[in-house]
Structure formats: C-alpha cells, structure tokens
Amino acid sequence: MKITILYFARIKEVVNYSSEDVVLPEEVETIIALKSWLSGRGATWQKLFDGSGVVRAAINHELVDDMATFDEGDEVAFFPPVTGG
Amino acid sequence: MYLKVSVQPGDFDVGAELQQLRAATPQAGALVNFVGLVRDVSTDGQVSEMVIEHYPGMTEKALQQIAQQAMQRWPLLGIRLIHRVGSLTAQAQIVLVAATSLHRQAAFEACAFMMDYLKTEAPFWKKEVGDFGQHWVEARASDEQAKQQWKLPK
Image (cartoon, rainbow over all chains, first blue to last red; front, side, top):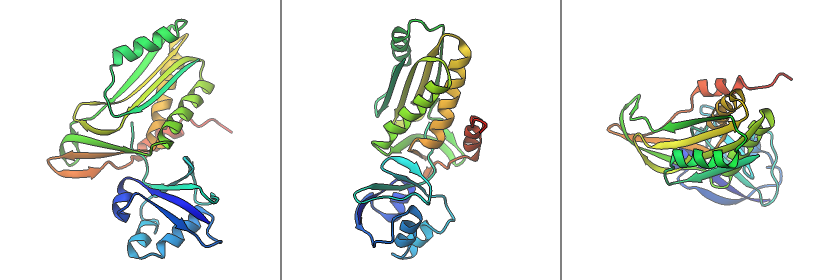
C-alpha cells in the first residue's frame, strides 16, 4: 500500500527530509512494522528506531502507539516527544 | 459555550483577547489565564531566540481536543487558546490559555489541565538559539507526571 510519511523536529534533521511517499509491502501495516521496515534502510534509520530515543507516531493527525494500523493513503508522522507550551 | 483556538506566528494582545472572551461570556464570574514566555536562559547559556516547529493540521486538532476535554470536565463558559509558531525572540509570549466560568475553581483547574495536556500532547517542538549555538528543548518527565495527576480513576 502507499502512504505518506512526515518527519518533524530532530527526526526531520536526522533523516534529512520532511516527507516522502512510500509503497509498502503488504505485511507492513502497523507503526511497529513500519519502524522496522524503515530501519532496513541503513544505520541512520536503525539508530533512530532502536529504542534509545523516544519516537512518537501519529496516523492522520491522531497520536497512536506502536500497535496502531494504517490504511492506503494514510498520513503517518514520526516525531520526538513534544515540547510546546 | 465559547471556544476559540489559534495557531499563529504573530504576537497576541492579552488584554484584547481577555476582553473578547469576557464579552463572549457575560455570565462569567471568573476569568483565569496563563501566558507562557520565552525565557532568556537555558542550561547551556543565554537564549536570544526560540524557534517553534509544529505539525500543521494536527496542531489545531490537538488544541481543539484538549479544550473540549476541559469543557467536558469543568463547568466552563468560555476558552481561548493561542499558541505561536516560528521564530520568537527572548521574553516573547508563546502561549495564552484562558478560561471563564461562573466561579473561580473551574477556570483555575481547567487552565492548569489544558497547559499540562498541551505540553505533552500538542505537536510543537522548541529549539533554543543563543550564545551556545542551538539545541532542541528536551521533553521533561515532570511534564508527563503533571499530566498523569489529571487522570480520572477508572
């Protein structure tokens, strides 16, 4: 399936871009599976999702946990813990 | 009930905003507000600028949801939320949270609740710039704990 992924703040700086459209293999349909799939891109991605820093996720503008599932055309976002206010 | 949420680069006039909230909720006997500011110091040194990044679309939705939760939980008459984004100078205003109610307790508690939720759920990220260079502000565990105190017993 095809989804859009957005990156924010420190994570955007690490991966070096703010958004991308990706076509995923059929079995990748949860946040945890997507993190693992992206980690396959290389050391930078692996380090990002290895659990040493907290990476929050949202699907279509709603905060979600690792087990959340997305569908074709969804917007998934990865970002660090928020620091507004 | 009156509810207005804004995410904007520009500054806001607290007096004018509170006046508008009062005018919209004339039954109010209490008006409570909080203004968050860019402090000019950090752990690394003097801060001259703060850059606030956000997630357009999600930010507005998150603030609306936080305000609606407060509305459900306390007998409020009105809420005004403003959060600035982009480049702000030291001592600039960042955020305004204001609430009106018949009596003070509801407005006091709702403002504290909304700030605690905003700090942990609304997608804003602060970067401090100063004589040390620049760094992302780290999320604080104490903010998460502050939010936990509002959890209702199941």
